[in-house]
Length: 216
Figure 1 (spheres, rainbow, N blue to C red):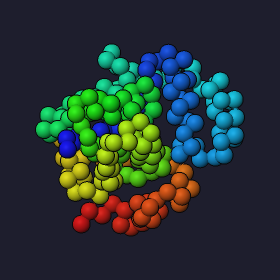
Figure 2 (figure 1 turned 90 degrees about the vertical axis):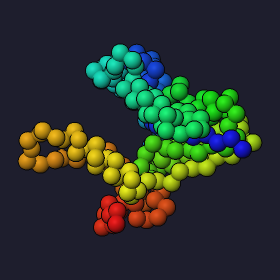
Figure 3 (figure 1 turned 120 degrees about the vertical axis):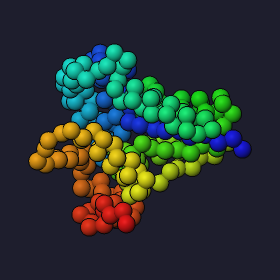
C-alpha cells in the first residue's frame, strides 16, 4: 500500500484584495473551533459586524508583509514541503485549513500519485482546538465523505519531541550569533483559557503545568 504525507498549515487569502481577505476571514472566523460560541451569535458577529468592518483594514496589513511570490506563509510552507519531499522517498503534499489551497486538494494530489495511506501532519507542535484539532477534524471529515477508501493516520503533537526542540534551538543559536543582547523575549500566540479546559486531551499540554516544557 503506497504511503504519502500531507502537511497542513493555517492558510492565507489568495491576494491582498479586500474581497479575497473577506472570503478568507469568513471561512476562518466561522470555524466553531476558532470562535466557540453558539452558531447564531457567531453568525451575527462575523457576518454582521466583522466582515463589514475588518477586511479592508486586514487587506492593508497583508500588503505590508506580502512577498512578490505571494503570501509569506504559503511560500514558506511550499518551500518546507519541498525540503521534506527531498528527504523522503514517498509523495508529500501541502494543504491549508483555510483558503483555496485546501486540505481536499492536498489529498487529491497524493491520490493522483497513487497514495492509498496518508500520514496527516498538522504543522503545529502543540495541541489547540483552534489549530491542531480543527485540522484533524476537517481532514477526517473530508476523508470520510470524499475518500473513504484512503486510510489516514495523524501525527501526534510534537512540542516535547527532543529532535524538534534541538532543531529549533540550533536554528535560534545560528541566527543569534553576532548579536549583542541583554535579554531574549519570546512572544506566543495565546488562546482562550476555555479552549484549554475544553480540548486538552491530556490535561498537561498547558494549564500552568511545570512539566509543560520539560524534555528529559
